[in-house]
Image (spheres, rainbow, N blue to C red):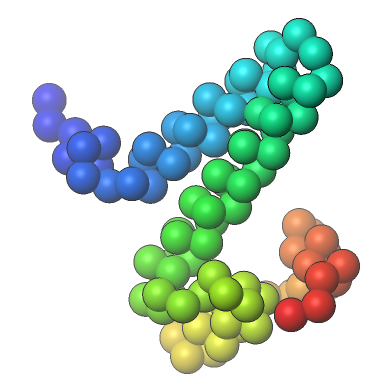
Length: 97
């Protein structure tokens, strides 16, 4: 069976790293280790999301100012705007971009 994305695509490795970190956080015996694994899981998951957005929208510069650049890339691709005030996107109301 051929799995080229496993060998050639960093997305797969990053996502499995995030899942591994989440699993380690759930198994950690102390708060220090749990916090370390949670931070690792969150930052790795965020990186995966940024890369997925960059690839899907064909825009390599989304990361620096994520919200503003994502809005611009969505508009440039003729897609419907995100509603930053609903769902998971509400968390971005806390950050200024």
